[in-house]
Image (spheres, rainbow, N blue to C red):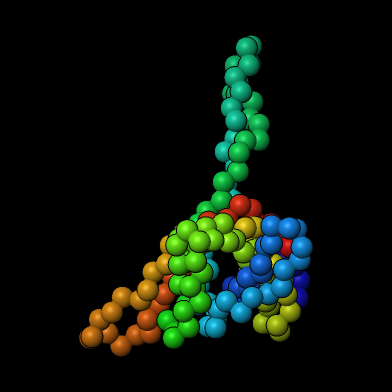
Length: 155
């Protein structure tokens, strides 16, 4: 497959890895029993610094500024597993408010080969949303987990 073809984005995997404070390596965590159906927010934005120089009348100089990261939203079919809410509750209860995990989002091609892999550094759950309940509905319930993080890198 050539590098010039657009990528299919329907085959991906999200994994969570412990990020211990002592700098030691952490292993994969069995945090998610169900695969995610959607992952949005893989973006970073750099705010340029505008520098106006005397005598430069044709626009200002642009310099690199601070980088901010979008909130990652993970959606999956609701299951009996309570792992996502458990992590959110662990952080929000105050007992371990700094319990962060590194997350990896891996994109695969149609043959199952890794195409791209992003690393989210020190991810922190900031919102959990259970499925809306409706007695007349027939679709699968979708739950969401929103993550803030401190870095987005191609791994």
